[in-house]
Length: 377
Length: 122
Image 1 (cartoon, rainbow over the protein chains, first blue to last red):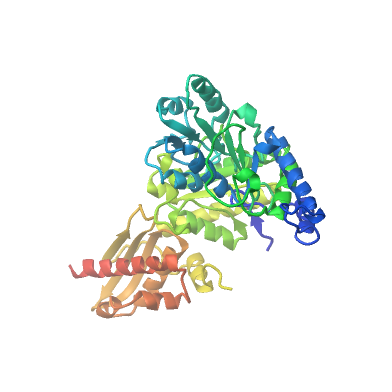
Image 2 (image 1 turned 45 degrees about the vertical axis):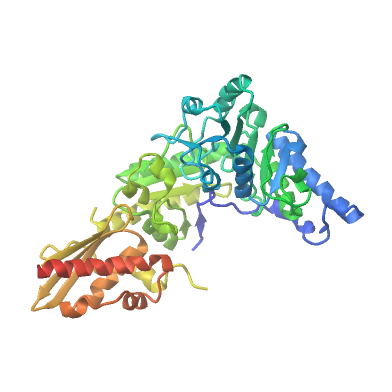
């Protein structure tokens, strides 16, 4: 049985050209870029080259690019580094890597995201206080794929900041956006932006925090001088090289093809299975995300049944995690616990084919039907 | 390397033998709640103090379905006094193993059976 991977939002495989570029940096070109001999120089060149690739992608200066060991680390650096004991505005459905550090603060506003799963710009503006120091809103939600109005918030905030002595910094977690949306920081008007290597066909263990020149963020890790002190620790050169190559390999044309397949999946499932509803806005949605709730079925059981057919997906049900509560993202949309438990997330990627989609659309309806017989609902 | 679920658990989940509402049941035990995600109904038919048939309806994960099926199979033919003595451990053994985070599903199925017996004895 040929297995079908439809969980690209969880992680992506490393592209062949990316791996090829990384390989020499494990062995021949192994040096520490802090060493000033010729070996070290080679590592410095590689580091600079990757930084250049990321800066080009972000339309930023190279010195504004900070390599980290993960997107989680980058998000922690942004929230803990920029909050400066002030008031934080974020949304209720951020990734745990933003919500986690926010929870260490007392003065945080969690914005509603409504049924559509989209933050309202006016809500952001309404919550700004005298002591607000940071706004952190994700670019694309990782579970339901809804696109947030980052540029609109950035533009509105620019106006607000004109009349403030203490400027509010604006951070966006763009991990799920990078494959399909422009991450031009000057267009989005963000001060801080997070990227991840393994969501863009690069390696795991590398992330990026873009830090706009002049943004004062305190460091959360202490050590040597690497990454201008923002992220001490010897640079993971193979992974950073992979990040650079992965970012250069992003193909905006993928978006159109993926979106067509996404729509086929959404329409196929909701028309062939009763009691199946898309979670989050269809209009403001990333090209590769499908998240659907099914009545009378629990998500993990659908996942396991699909897995038996060789199809890999994900769910927001508590039963597929170690927690007792279903996805906070789905609950933030106003879904009941039961509905949140009955969700499936299907995420497409560059290797997804029409044939795989057809296979999913054939295999899923009988599974849902069978599980509904068992649940009697 | 162990897969997440045992072969037996997957087999039970994919092809349960005891699911379905029992129209002529003597009692039913309803457990779980929609917050936790698992909702179970365990039906029993009793004759002369002995469980002669059992079935279930479960909205829940693969483990919840597999353990519902196991509990039904294990109590059919048992005296109700013996049936309530059944343990999670025996159920898990019947399934070869269960992931640690799923052992509570066996407890839930067991509680469903005990609730059914309690209702029968009322």
